[in-house]
Amino acid sequence: MEENCVMNTYGRYDVTFEKGLGCKIYDSNGLEYVDFVSGVAVNCLGHSHPAIINAITTQSSKLMHSSNYYWNTPHKLLAKKLVDNCDHDKVFFCNSGTESVETALKIARKYGTLKDVKDKNVFIYMDNSFHGRTIGALSVTGQEKYQKDFRPLIDGTRKVEFNNINDLIKNFDDKVCGIIIEPIQGEGGINIASIEFLKEARKLCDKFDALLIFDEVQCGMGRIGSLFAYKKFSVIPDVICLAKGLGGGFPIGATITNVKASTAFVPGDHGSTFGGNPLGCAVGVAVLTELVDGGVIDKVDDKSMYIKERLLKIKEKYGIIDEIKGMGLLIGISLKTDTKKFCKSCFDKRLLVIAAGNNVVRLLPPLNVTKPEIDEALDILEAVISEI
Image (tube, rainbow, N blue to C red; front, side):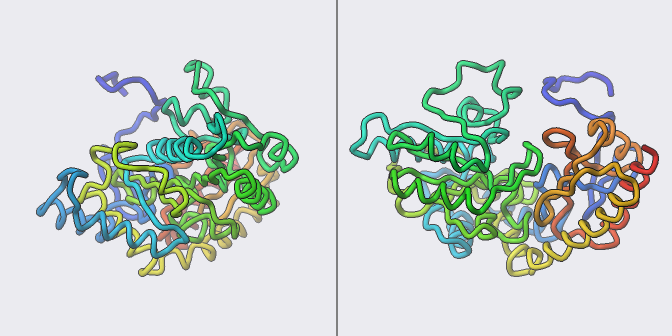
């Protein structure tokens, strides 16, 4: 691809995509690809879904943006629809997952200042985690490759080994204002938090009056078979970070809190110029309506089982797959081969997949993917494996 004016921040494939429909995406030469990346878990309803197109068309003809100095109807509707489907009370809207995480960190820091404990400002985070690219989010991201060139990061952080309860207990005290955890680590390699570990985190937060933050940016919004990922683990956090699938392709993020956490913020503490804009929130309402009321999420577990059963047969046949990981339609394949080359081979056969962590390939199809589309994707995947 010829050089252009876009900053060099991604290692892009030599392709330009022009349009998409459902699980398929088409390049500038008209070639069709099966999309099992979904914008990295963003396009939860696939490409060009009628409900999203209708929401954008209808709302953009009325009001796209005003200001957070005033109310607008879509952001009230979306906030209520989110709260009605979880155990929480308040929503702050922003534009991305990183912004959602930044909001959660600020809430926890402010919460700590309101307590009768000096310097209650420490964050606990997990090794191998990923929470975003801003300085604040990087400071609680447990991967040195993302942090090393941007130090010094913010002070007051402690890294804990993921799923190590003893390490968690050792690092927890009354100086901790918040702990941030991905129920399933996405970028880190599709690593699932144990229920015991999450329960201990909840117990320690209650004991030391800290906030439990779940980063559900990648694993939330139906991706693992429930609208909110925490419901699969039976542990209720104080704060939830959302984005990606919430807009189905339109930029929107949200931070959801219980009453305890939300009371930390007062007017002037935080804001987002575009957060809660009518257009983004109208899309969010349309997406949630399809996912919840339209029954899309209800079929995720069945599709997950179908994919895993097929992958298990491929694993037994070829011996290239080490492990099949993940939940719902957030699936990881641990491979005994170079994942970068593997993803490129899939791309050459017109299947889009991406890597995660060490030697893991992610499958992130739209949540409304059909079984024939799953078969088409796995046929290509098997063809690549057979060549190896």
